[in-house]
Length: 311
Image (cartoon, rainbow, N blue to C red):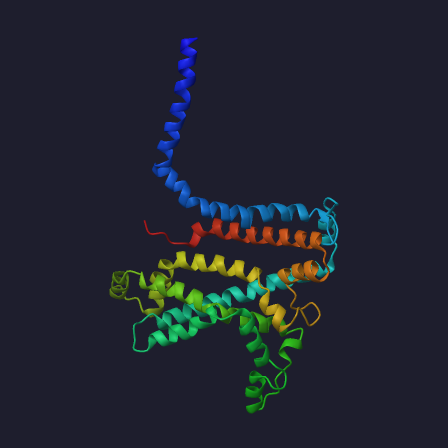
């Protein structure tokens, strides 16, 4: 009996000491610093994703309780002709925006990498659109693409060319929005490329010059391999961003003419907040998530074949 009583008295004391020891330990402070990110991930990302999966299995018209219908929304999605048109528009948008954005950003970085007088002004001017509101940026370009009074058509008229109705032509509207979107964020990728170019070892250029390499060969065999990690980063970020475009479409074309500029995020918004079909909108959102995840995994798997890592 005495040994049992002593055990009961000793065990709580050891537990208290362990808790006190943990509170002052490095592990405690590590968990403390990580906790805001973990809590934010759970509240902003994980739980909404799980609830969105549940919503995609329901017929929820906002007013009233969700009605569980299983996979009917996904079956409806497969048989929805508008969805396939929207998906095609999204892929075309991404295929057009990504190369335009990255190529222009890389060219600008190559031009602006030298510390010449006044070079900071041009770097700032190119980066300003990144900080500009997407709504303001889209409104400005919508007026610039105006059919009669738009700046672009007025310039064309000055040289004797009859400008088209850019945003009302099914063959031109999506291309116009792609150009506007590419120019909006080209400054961000330019800054990333500038930082990467400044980290390239100058001795590599000197060695290649002694081997007889000209500027073009130096770019292909020295500069480009050394900045491939940054190219990989900008590629992933730009592809994901191109899949989530919404503001430009909403302001400039409202999905028109017809469905020619309607993309997946706009289609999600349309079903959720115009038709109040939250179940179907959630199913489309899950499909978009899977598509983005698919392209990201492909890029991540292929990086070993072309991304140069300095050992």
